[in-house]
Length: 264
Image (cartoon, rainbow, N blue to C red):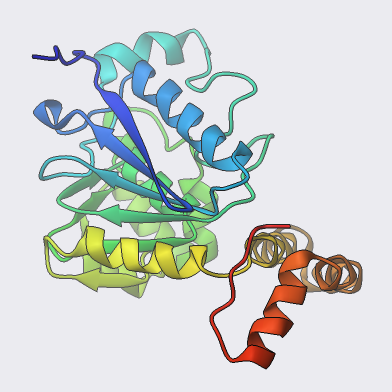
C-alpha cells in the first residue's frame, strides 16, 4: 500500500496530446501546500516544454477543487517574502517569465476558494459544476489576493463587480461567476470533468502553433492594445503559412478529411 504524503501531491497523466494535471489532497479539501505549488509549477513546465503536448486540463480529486491555502504551512514563507514557485519553472498563474504559451482548461467543483479562483482566471477556458462555491476571501485573513485576481477580475467583470467580490470576500455561485465572465460553462455537478475534457480535446485537435499564436496575439491586445496586436499579425501569419501544419490544413481541406497536426 502506498503511503500518501501529508502535504499532498499533483498528479500528471499524458493522454494523447493532453496533459491532465490533478490536484490531489482531498483529505484536506485540497488545501495547497508549498510542495503542491512546486509540483504544480513542474507540471505546467512539462506542458510547456513537451512538443507532443498541445493542451492542459487541470482538475481536482475529491468533492472540492480546493479550500485554498494551507495557511500554517504557507504563512511562514510569505512572512519571509519567499516565493511559492521555483525559479525557472512555468508560473501556473502566468504572471512571470517564463510565460506559458499553451492553453489550459480547468474543471471546477465544490469549494473553490482563493487559489482556485486565481487558477481559473489564469486559464483559457473554465468549466464549473453548479455546486461551486467561489470566494476570494483574503481580506478576511488580513492579506490580499496575490496571484492575479486584483486585475484579472477587473478586466473580466468591471470595477464594481470585481470590488464587490474582492473587498467583501463573500461567496459567489457558478452562475454568478459565468455572469462575470470568470467561467464559460456551468454544468450539473459530476459532469464538469467530462465537459472540460471534451473542450480540451477539441483545442488539442487544432493546429497547436496556430492556437499558441492566437493566444499570444490576444494577450498582446490586453497588455498593449489592439493596434500593437494588429501590428504583429502579418509577420505571425507569414510564419504560420510556412509551417507543416498549414500545409496539412490545406491538404486536408482538399481531401475532405480531418487534419492531423504535429506542431511544426
